[in-house]
Length: 97
Ligand SMILES: [Zn+2]
Image (cartoon, rainbow, N blue to C red; front, side, top):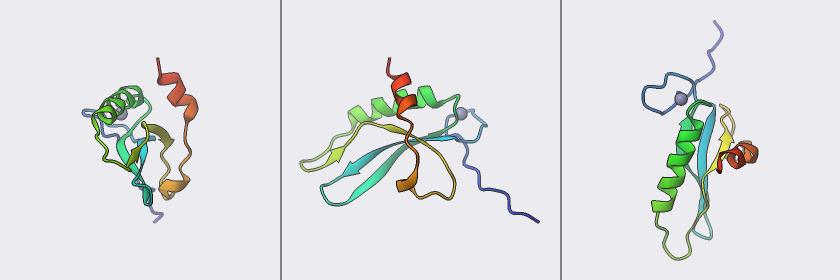
């Protein structure tokens, strides 16, 4: 029997769609760099989740030497390393209004 591809569900409350996008921002302390995930959501919830992520981001405090860039939108692909995710700057720009 073929294996079913692993599906990630949208994290928004009451949403039963599969997640298509990852909202994350790059965090760095000057040496180590990692992707801090804010949300995993479907296309329908993306706009709300991106707004919430930006709000959360503004409340995040960083200590001296730490860098946390504003949230970015990535296409969610299973089995792809987080460093290889495709960033959707076009969608980010369309949401800034
Ligand atoms: Zn959703």
